[in-house]
Each structure stands twice: as structure tokens, then as C-alpha cells.
Length: 246
Ligand code: 13P
Image 1: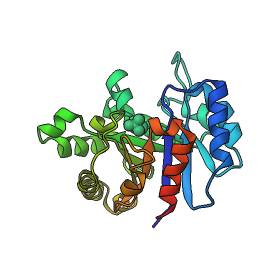
Image 2: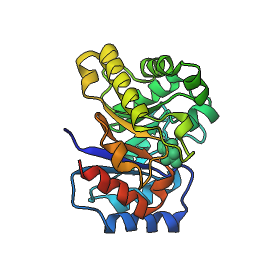
Image 3: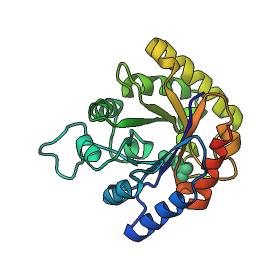
Image 4: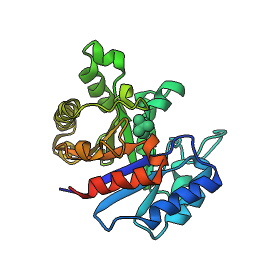
């Protein structure tokens, strides 16, 4: 089994002082274990956090990037710019961007291709809404998102984040996650063949210090994408330790 990955998505949270303090708190109490840890601060804190985490076991990731390497794209940030800062990962297609920035599968796929070309590891997010789940469309939606968002030969990380579990405090149940993982693995193999067997799948959606061990023990869960709880170093480190136990 490969190392589990714990990714902290800070979303739009963090000014200079608290971002530095949070990162230092994490770095000073890292367990001595085989877990990959990535923290994803907002763009404004990337340079500082990439520099603080350089030469540490913690990697620094961004929360989005553009699909072009440079040009007339006011306000956007290219994957090359991220790599230039020492950033190694980038979250793409998060549901909050799909919902509020009009990102569609094709946009996510183009960004994923660009990120890989720049040497970044993409963490591509997919997940169904509550309505899609209740009307029995979840598997179709996930299948289409995989097909549309992941390029051929994809070798990054996939994050399954059911939208109804994000920020609600109501994580999916062990049985829901187990079913979703079984479906996603089969779908990845169906769409990508041999390659689909090794794509790592993270779970995200209300992961916290209390439920992390149970979630991380589910077969095929390669790690967690953590939102709210990643803002609290103690909670985040508890999640990291839960991963290390497997
Ligand atoms: P929460 O952990 O706050 O539910 O957020 C999950 C998420 O969206 C991580 O990308």
C-alpha cells in the first residue's frame, strides 16, 4: 500500500500572521510517520508557505490555476508561476469553483493537462450534489465527471467530495464511502484500463479529528482532503496521525 496523503485546503482563509503561525504549529509537531502532507493556502500566502515548508516533509499546494502558461489573463495564475514558487500540488475542479466560477469538466481537464505539463501534481475534485444523490444520479454524474475532467493517461490524484458533505459537519458514512470507492475504482479501470488501478482516491467532506481514523481505514481511501479542520493545527495533526496508523 502506498503512503496515505492528507491535504489541507484552507480555502479563502489566512492572512500573513495566522498562516505562518498555523504552518509553524504543524511543522513543529509532525509525527515521525510515513504520510504525505500537503497544505493549500490561498494564493497570497503561497510564497511564504512554500518557503516555510521547503526542505520539510510538508508540501505546498495551490487551490486553482489557469490552463495557459502566460498571457493576457487578468487576475489569473499559471501553473508555471506556481511551480516557480516551489508549489508542488494544485487542487482543480473543486465544487466551490465549479459552482461559483462556472468551471465545467472541460475547463478542469485543460487545467489538469497544464498543471501536469508544469510538473505539478493535480488533485482533481469530483462529487455529486444532494439532489443528484437523492434522485439516483450520483454514479452517472461521477462517471461523467471522471470522463470529462481527467485527461488520457491521468496520473494525478482524484478527490471524491460529495457536495452535500462539504462544510456541513455531516461526512458521508463509512458505507457510503465504501460504495463510492468501489464504484470509482471500477469506473477508473473501465475508462483508463491498467492505469486506473493505481490512481489514488482521496475522500473529502467534513473530515475531522473525530472521524478521520474510521474514514482513512476504508479500503482504497488513499487519504483525505480536509477543509475546515485543516485550519486548526491540532485537528489537522490528529488527522495526519490517524493516517499514519494504517
Ligand atoms: P470541509 O472539510 O470543511 O467539509 O471541506 C471539504 C473540502 O471542500 C475540502 O476541499
